[in-house]
Image 1 (cartoon, rainbow, N blue to C red):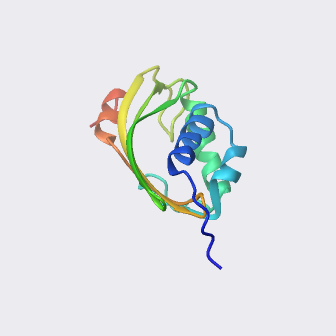
Image 2 (cartoon, helix red, strand yellow):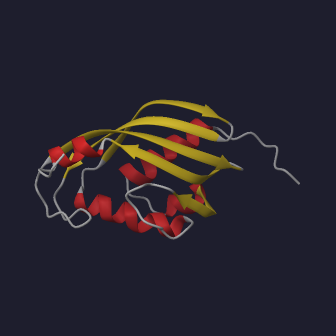
Image 3 (tube, rainbow, N blue to C red):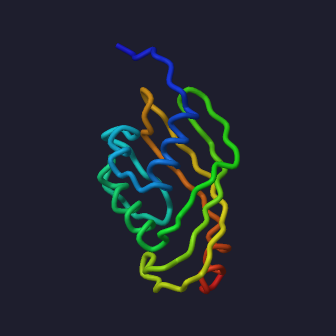
Length: 141
């Protein structure tokens, strides 16, 4: 039987950024993501499905960039899909996916696409301005 309750995609999206990425509340992922959640981000190869696959990514980013902040600039939502334009800022204080701490300040834009099922995020795609990020961190770009 299909669940016909209405869910607020904006509330889900804001919780995802505010509680998980900005505040580091990993337990919120257990409420926000489906058990079979799939992360299709191009820079992460085959992460484990569900909240367990995203938790180490959040920890790694927040460890490397302790002042990590996601700002929701704009979004378009339907009951089962969200496209969000976000600004990601922070200072790299620790190793970030093999890159040593640089002390560099980052300020990049992302497009994130979230698929929803029964009020929870079930799939994720992300497009980041990787060239700008690499330039800001002192790498090629």
